[in-house]
Length: 543
Image 1 (cartoon, rainbow, N blue to C red):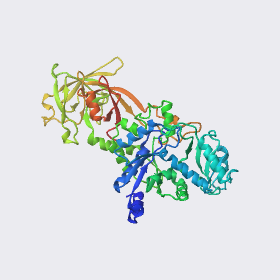
Image 2 (image 1 turned 60 degrees about the vertical axis):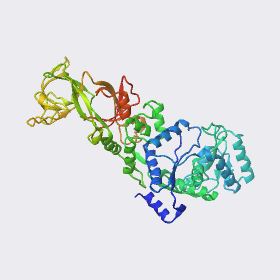
Image 3 (image 1 turned 90 degrees about the vertical axis):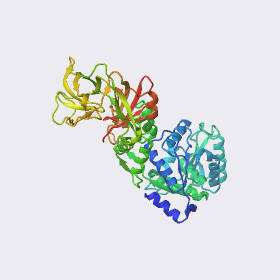
Image 4 (image 1 turned 30 degrees about the horizontal axis):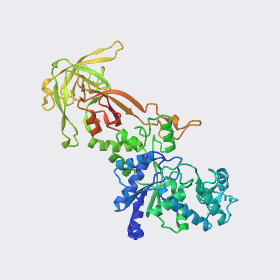
C-alpha cells in the first residue's frame, strides 16, 4: 500500500465524501502522452478501480494556441490501449461559462481586479520569495470599474496582452503563487471546441480546482511540481465556497537516457531528429506501442516503480525488463537471420526439402507448433561462426559440431572466402540420425544455432533501436550545448534479414509480438506490406 492509498483508506474509514472515491486524469491536449503520463494514468484509474470508485478523463483545454483535436484523439487511444476506460469525458472548456461567473463573483467580493500592467511589469512586481512584492497600481480599482473592464475584456475590446484579471491575495506571501496570481488573459484565438466564442481564457490555477469541484472529485492526484500550487487550489475553493477536493502530490517519473518534456519532444519531431511522435525511440505511449511494448508491461512497470513522495530517476533498463518479462510469456517464436552468411550441407540431397516442427511458445503449451522448411542451403548468423575459435567459443568452427535448432547436428568441414578475406560460404556435413526428436545419445554438442532456408525464407526490413540519448541525463549539457547534442547517433540501424516463409502480412499483423529465437523480441511494424515485412526490435533477450 502506498501513501496515497493510506490517505484514501483513512478518508473512507472516517466517512469523508460519503466514503466515495472519485479521481480524474486531466491531460492538456497539447502533445502526445509519454511514459510519465502512463504512470499517472495507472495510478488514477487503478485507485478508482481498487476502491470501487470512478475516474474521469478531463482535458485541460484552456490554451487554444497549443491545443488540437489530434492530441485529444491520441490521448483517448493511449488510455484505452493501456486497458482503462473513463467513467465520464469532460473538458475544462465545458466549464468556461461557470468559471466566468465565478470570476465575476470574486471581483464583486473585492478578491480580484483587472491589471493593465505588461507581463514583464507583473513579473518584476512579484519580486523574490525573500522579499515582499510590489502592489500593482491598479490593485485598488473599484468593483464597478473591474467588472466593467472584465466584461469588456470578454467582449473583445482589448488586444492580446493588454490586460489580465488577477486574484487579490497577498503580495508579501513567501509563496510566489499567492502574489496576486493571474486568473484570465486575453487570447484572440480559435478554440478547438468553443471556436471564437471566447477571447479570454482562464489560467490553469483558476480552472483546475474548480473543474475538480464541479465534477465532485474527491482526491485530486497530481505530480510533485504542483505542491506549491496546492495553497492556491485551496484558496480558490474556499473563496468561492464550493466543494473542496483534496489535492495529493506524488513524485513524477524520471528515467535515464530519456526526456519527459513535451516542448523538447516537439522540438525533436519538428527538427526531424525522430520520425514523428510515434517513433519507436520516443518515450511517448504511441512510440512505445510501435516499439512493441505491451500494455501489460507498462502497467507492470508503473506498479514496480511505485508511488514516492520525492523525485528520483529510474533506470530505463527496468522498463525493458518489464517488457522482456511479459513478452517471454506471450511472444510467438520464429527464426530470423539478421546478419547472414551462407551455410551449405554438402551431403544433404540437393532436391530434398523437409519440414521441421518448431514450437510456437514454450511458455504456452496451447500455442502449438509450426512447420519450417529445411534444405541444403541455409542462412546462419555470421556471429555464430568463427574461423579461429578458442575453447570458450562453443558455436560453429572448422571441425566443430553444433545442432541446427529443430533439425540436425552438423560439422563444419571448410569455408570459402572472397578476395577481401570475408567468409562467403561455410561448408558442413550433417548426420541424418540426429534430427530433433530422435537424438543419437552418443552425440552431444555444446551449442544450438538458428537458421533460415535460402530458397524459401522471406526478406524483411529489421529496425534495430538503441537509446535515443547517449547519456543518462540528456538535460545535463556542457556550456553552449543543448540536449540535442546528447542524441545517440546510433539510435537506429536498419538492415535486411531473413524470416520464416509462413510469415505473411496477415499473420504478422495478427500476432504482432515475436521472439526472434536467440536474438530478441520484435514487433511487426505498421509500415509492413505483403512484399516487405518490417520488424522493430523491442528489447534483447537478456539485460
